[in-house]
Amino acid sequence: MGALEKIEKAEIRDLLGKGWLTHDGMWFYSTYLECGIEKANQLNKAAIKSMAPFEMDRMKRILGIVQEDLGNFDQLFQFMRSALELTLPESVFKNFHLTPFAENFMHWKWNDMKCFAYTGMKQIGLIDGYHCGVIYRVECWLDALGVKYATQPAIEGCLMHEKGVCEGDIQIFLLKGKKNYKQNQ
Image 1 (cartoon, rainbow, N blue to C red):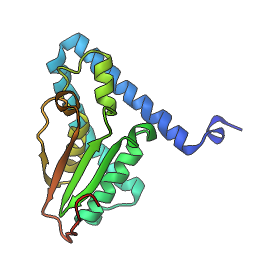
Image 2: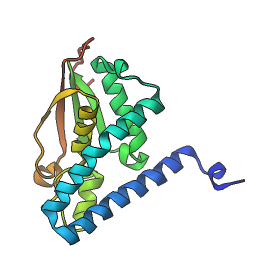
Image 3: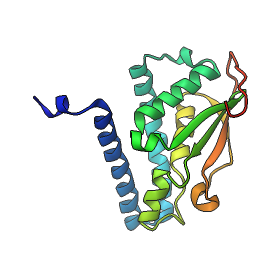
């Protein structure tokens, strides 16, 4: 019996996801050491933006979605939630909440001080200069899908570091088949 047969699917997902997060953090740190914090932030965002179309194409393929399936808010929301669930390790995903709360609005919130990027950047001493790549990645996914949106608040640094909480809203524009959601559904 091989190693893959001995390990649960969720454990494999968590292992691979944590490996990716560790690589991402160490890449950022190494770039910082070589080029400084501003260049590390700039290169991190460039990498996220260039990676997003590949991620969305892969997610659509694995989830059996074609672009036309994302024509309304409900479909887009479910796709985004599924993409996050498949991308993030379970130990991270359980601390991130993406919920619909009003017509064409998604609300995101990290559990108290549980954002992996905040924790990692704080551990390596870069939190003061770090610009959030997590919500930026979600925005780049929406860009790659051709979705018009607005994010509030606009994020320059790290909300968890600056305000003690990371949460906000993404308003989605121009989707067909709107569905009304009640606050805190």
